Image 1 (cartoon, rainbow, N blue to C red):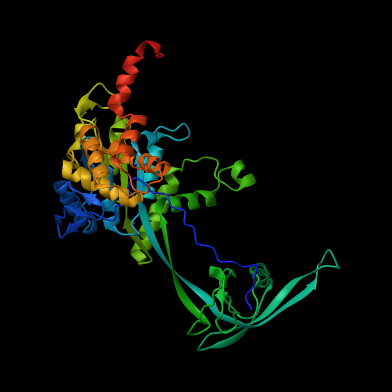
Image 2 (cartoon, rainbow, N blue to C red; image 1 turned 90 degrees about the horizontal axis):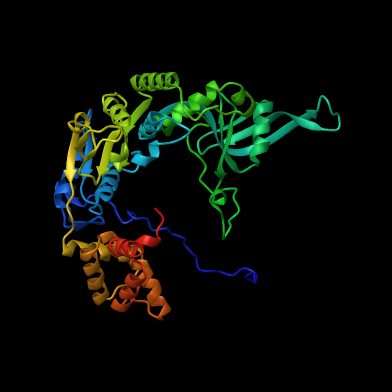
Amino acid sequence: MPLEDITEVAARRITRVGAHSHIKGLGLDGLKAKFIADGLVGQIEAREAAGIIVRMIKEGKMAGRAVLFAGPPGTGKTAIAYAIAKELGKDVPFVAISGSEIYSSEMKKTEVLMQAMRKAIGVRLKEKRHVYEGEVVQLEIKTRKHPYNPYQEIPDHVVIGLATKDDRRVFRAGQTIAVHLIQQGVTIGDIIMIDAETGKVTKIGRSEEAAEKYEIATWDEKPIPRPSGPVEKDKEFIYVLTLHDLDQISAQQRGGGLFSLLFGGPSSREIDSEIRRDVDEMVKKRLEEGTAEIIPGVLFIDEVHLLDVEAFSFLNAAMESELAPIMIFATNRGITKVRGTDIESPHGIPLDLLDRLLIISTRPYTREEVKKIIEIRAAEERVKLSQEALEKLTEIGIESTLRYAVQLLSPSMEIAKSRNRDVIQPEDVEEAKKLFSDIKRSVEELRRYEELMLR
């Protein structure tokens, strides 16, 4: 008989639609870009150039150089950079920052850039550990009187039996492992793994043979099969960390003076250069031993013109480093001053750094491309458009900006809902346009009331 107080409810999924969540890749067939593919529309030459960059990165031919996306606002520079990251693969680190992020009161500019660079370099570490793994078929925890409290008992040792499909062993282990077993709540029928060196116990799950069958079960309650092979074995573990992760681990191990002794953390958010040198040496040694592998990642700096001459000088030198990520920059500036100087330069970037960049230009979208992009964004945001409303938004995208037209999608949908419709009509778009100004109308309003504005 079913329980009456348990009722089934429809699953409700909470999602957030990002500006580039619809992008799945560069949309290439070989090195030729399709007009519409993987969430991207148009920008054929820029996407084909990006495809060549992806191949160069995979073949390790990007050392000492970087990529610059240059074009007017709203022409897909950031979108193509994200598409490059998608093409490189899931395990490839991708770190995106804005040029303004380096100006922090807590850290030096070069430290912010250095941490971003090292976050963009992955390290796949391989480690062999001597372990005992199997299903617990016998468990006897022996206790003794507490030395300072005769009324309390503490674990003394444990007799534990482990079984796999091919082996069965019984062990006697000390107090450390006994305490770990109690802390993990291990019982007969659990599948566990014990590290022979540290005594750490890891509870993997419940054996299929011993598990109760639950109609509703969490991930750790779902039964798993009993392991095969011997109980005692050498097992290889793979960890994927970034160089910045290794820097932080090393800094915490070394401590940070009195603060670290009292609270267990480094006293400063900045990491000493000596620590980084030691981490680099450790990684290089592991690479020679074959127990580590470098995963080159991508550091994407949007609005790169906001960096100053000191930051540009640092990046120029960093490109020559052995452990440097792939750097991708984006800017919408033309001829402008290099921040921190009186020198004017293309894109606000010093000429010595520009010489190292592969520059990819993006151009304004055509009417057909604007229309297709609005269609894709409407589908991503789960907004239904009538053909007339689509044409109206396309006109707005041509007259004003593509970003403004895309921004009107959700307000137009809300207006349509208030009128008991689930499809946006042209009058809904017109009402949203009336309520929300574009840049041109906003400037006109400011000029109209200029005398009332604060100066």
